[in-house]
Length: 427
Image (cartoon, rainbow, N blue to C red; front, side, top):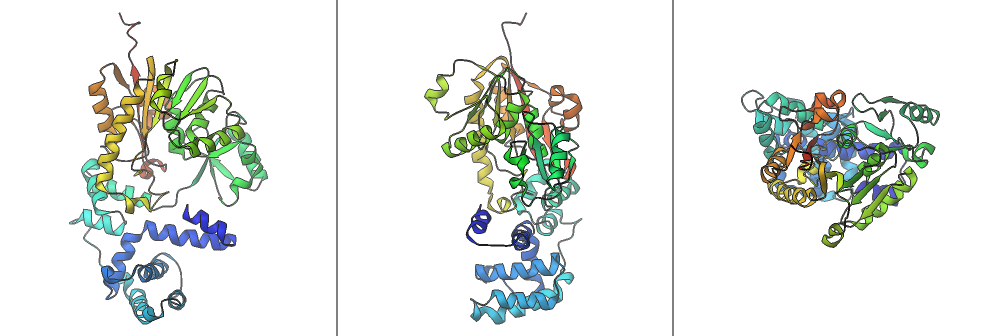
């Protein structure tokens, strides 16, 4: 968001934008390792360094470790960055010289004897998150692979709008506009586009032929099993990426009721729906009175719950540094409340689909298990039963959907499909 505002206010060339993005995202992805190198390759003590000066050191360290920048170029950059901080110029120059001289001699914690410390520092994830994942996955190798994947730049994945075109046709259209792509392996609706710059200025986008949507997000929407003619409630619709896909899966037949507490997001959703031809989407602020007025119980209630976002660190590397342990507890409590509230909109025999973009048992399996313990009239449907060909490889031993960055090269998503018993048909 801040980058977007910066690029609106200042004029940057395409190359300059790419450089700014690389520095910001690169430093956020690798901040833990960078800070460790600053402390261990020089005499600097991080807690004592002014934040502006520390960020200059981070930029120079990133150049030294992750870019092919000459030592002279790094020193010149450090000097230029200190133009408004001249009293720190000597300190910065000496520190950067030490980093250039010693960064490849820094010793990290022993990988075998101290896996928690090693993964946290070398792969730049907060200590408590690595500790949590080690408890959940049990294998240091798995956690290291996950953290490594989180530090890779994600691909640009788009999702064809089935109301407008087909995937192969979209691929040809984009190629004519200068954008080559390849079909996604896991989702039958996706394309991985080879370049990002200007994709939203294409005629294909203006005509509503596609939306940007990660492959994992596409799969979690497919997990709903939405069909033409159904009444589907998207309980936490946000800006509506999944609502639009639901409409496409339903061929704009039936109703998608998109709920969100933010009027601005719903307004954006309506604009996107108009461009996409998603004529069966209705929007509504979900206050208590409005929910009580819903006459028709839903065939499917889809809850893409607010969560910690631990599955999308590769897209939002800053979020891993802002997240705290207490956030997980608070979110888990909120998620349970949302499940209780919106489960009342499911018709007998209908589906309740709970989803998050996080890798956190407290927000995923534990939330669903607690709900099913309370509501014996709902039962879990293994994800593979929704579509064995697509979901077989994503179904856990407990029957849940799970996609992981280091396994599937998607964002990390969790999903659970539950069905409300239809007592009228029971013998």
